Length: 214
Image (cartoon, rainbow, N blue to C red; front, side, top):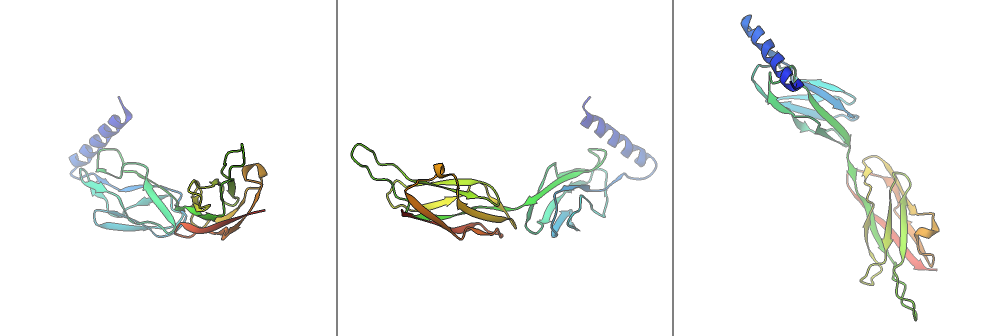
């Protein structure tokens, strides 16, 4: 017999015992929270709203609900700089299980880091040598991740780029040319502008990589 089924039998039996004594089983709408490090989280259920402080690992609504009453825990407000999500079912009916327990997990919001590059022209064909793209590899040493820029096929030498690894709100980033010379063309010099900063509450799109021939 599955544990969930056993739990339901226990819950129903307990409710029947309380009812038999002239009362009605009451349940607390509660749960656990993981990773909440900033203030501002507000949870709602059936017209009731509670504020959950930073660092809290659990929550309980003050008003209990009777056996068979439906509940639906929701996010009335997300915490500052973070995104919280449910890790278990957040709706149901009191008495389906021995106790109501809703799981929530929170993490810092993340945003894209990128910008534009210029001067990255294709190496022209020379006799028997075919044309070949130039490459430049960027490294985000503060938050991790790298991206390789490649000469665009349209011959403009310019384009947009973004790191595949986003950066968390409040985390520092530091973008430089990758120190390994094998990862970038050796016949050009490239510089990075606006490469150092701290991620805010929006994507960073103002990095500028300028390349020129040696």
